Amino acid sequence: MPKKKKESIIRSIENVDVRLNKIIAEKLPDIVSDANADIKTREEFKYEIISIEGNTAEIKLISQIGFEPRTIFSIELELIGELYFKEAVTQEKIEENIKDILNLMASKMSFIISFITEEMLNQPYILPPIIEQFTRG
Image (cartoon, one colour):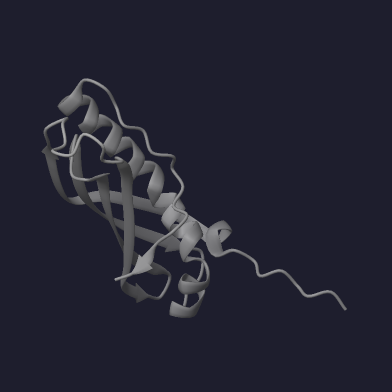
């Protein structure tokens, strides 16, 4: 008998409210001391489950966006997502579906980062609204 695919809880979300909780943005020099340095993008994502009560869950997404070595800009962004489900939700269900939940929040993160970098650099830095790698923190 084929294994039944786990159903995502995303379909049971009635409403999502994602708000900016904290931002630290810094424009940095465009040059690096080592002319041979290989400049790489740095995108780190962490999440924290703040609370789960009945049919609501509150998730924090912390994003650190910039470059290594430190150049051009550095942004630390903290979003809080309040999710309202059709029925009661458990910690286990949230954990099983955390990637999908974070990706719901990623579109707001992408918008904010592109807006801020446009204002800082006269050119937006556009992140895809998808989070592939993340840690719990």
